[in-house]
Image 1 (cartoon, rainbow, N blue to C red):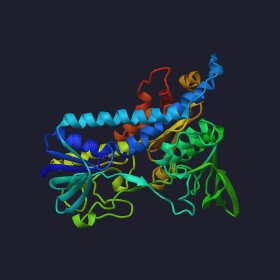
Image 2 (tube, rainbow, N blue to C red):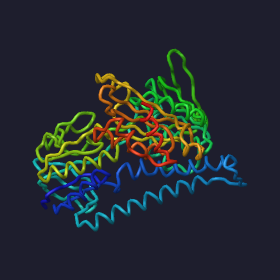
Image 3 (spheres, rainbow, N blue to C red):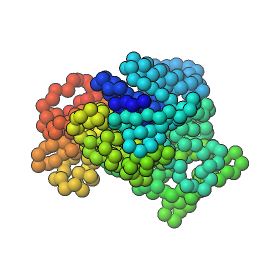
Image 4 (cartoon, one colour):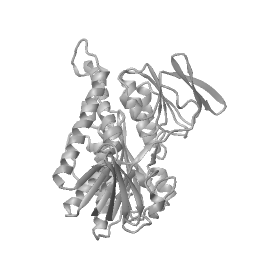
Length: 453
């Protein structure tokens, strides 16, 4: 069959693109090879945040006395916590399926492959279907990177998919990779009593993140008794009886880290294999599919969005790209702007970042001034008993224009939207100063930071 728009991949970018195209009255085919929702819903954002919610509530229970409360014999059932995670994912997947059904678009479970021009095949359990589409949007997402570490294939060495299937809390765990996902899993398992060590080969956790965020988050992780080893190389993993031994090296010092489980969390890579990119004449690199500012590939009329482009691997960036790709496929002329895409780390406390870090702003030649404000001075944070963290604004000292905002603290993932709006609209720090913030709220930490100029 021929469609106006075919979308390959049913993650946050893919299903959003398909729904938006259907809303515009286009005939749409959406192809997904596994489950709707992609990595974000099935193996990333949603399951990890569901687990973190349980972990956060568990830690709050242990601090009841600080709030004049008491309770006896409270405990946790990790199998039930994992079962709730599965139920949450299933509920949201069902919701997406319902939206697709109501939209009137055609949805097929299968594996798609481009065959040249605007043709493609879809292999389903019933055989191979042949289709064409005036426009094609590729949204095949990403998959965990499997590091070439000797012993990386041993039982008990898990990736971010496998760790979501365990039903008991290990006594000890080594997390290889100090990115957002690695730190989030470290926070979850540490909260439930697992002795957790994070090993990062780069000089800092969250590579590329503003150094003040890294320092504050590092302090918080240490308070949770999470050991963080940076600038540390992994030599190999071996088994010694019931335990795994991770051999690491920092400078000239070697050490061995025993663990019940090892989590490989060293990033993700674009899924391009078997997609037929060569047949369709689409340029790509090891990083992902090459697109222009309009998200169009080297093959006219074929677009790529989300993780498969190797750009900002975040669900909300994929959803934003979906809207732009659909608009352009329908005759528009929109450009994807990555300058104000917020990023969040759902540790305890959370971290939220948008725009330029202090270092990046200086490297780009700005005359930089930084403002900082501690949550310890925020009334709402004090009343919540969550005073760890700070707000930092990076601005152009000449114009006052906000270049970046970085927050570590309670509900940082919500508060960072203030920075995203400011950067998207070219606001100055004076614009934030003039905006009345309600009291007592955590948002006053942003106002307090801006008002410290």
